[in-house]
Image (cartoon, rainbow, N blue to C red):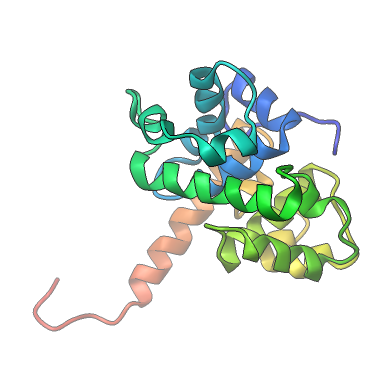
Length: 198
């Protein structure tokens, strides 16, 4: 893994966990939907705090109280029940296919295409999320199998500011957020108008 610390949660303790724990990083990426990015990537730290120890995929896979841990105020996610279920599915998949170790998903891949396929097979990871996480691994964690930028698509572009893969500071977070707002506004502008609506 790359030496530098991540800045995805914009919180020193949460980011330190993401930087040293691949399961925390993978879980943060899974949680990154329908809530602010910083809250999503703080989620693994909040879960670790509530568990009282580091995250363990085998434990989480069997944990009956995971939904309660997610829902305890302040809730880890806007949809604590369903997202706790997704995290549990992810951990079960890791136990079944990767010896419970998130880093094994990318440890021995030789091409970006192979890594992309592995990521897309993870529960809760569609094509876009898989490409963004691939770009994050390549740009910030030193995971750079042959063709990784191509496999990540536009998210792998050098100098891009379009996703979590490009957030390395508060300033870049603001720039990525501004880019996403522009894309959203452009899509809204391009959408066909429905008669009778303004």
